[in-house]
Length: 56
Ligand SMILES: [Zn+2]
Image (cartoon, protein in one colour):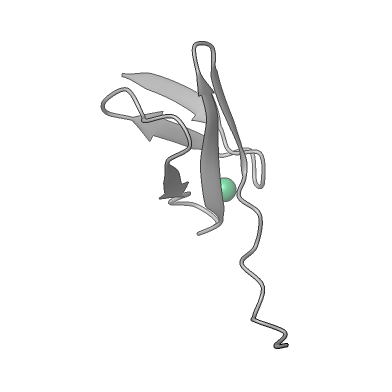
């Protein structure tokens, strides 16, 4: 189990198990979508927002 600070709101984000690289998860505090950039060391970042399809 490991704890990281949410890059969005700085709340503690707890992982019960080792996260998968590039997996997405939601911060329980700010509901922001976060992405696991690296697992060793564990690095998390705000996931890029999925934009609406602008068409064409
Ligand atoms: Zn957060």
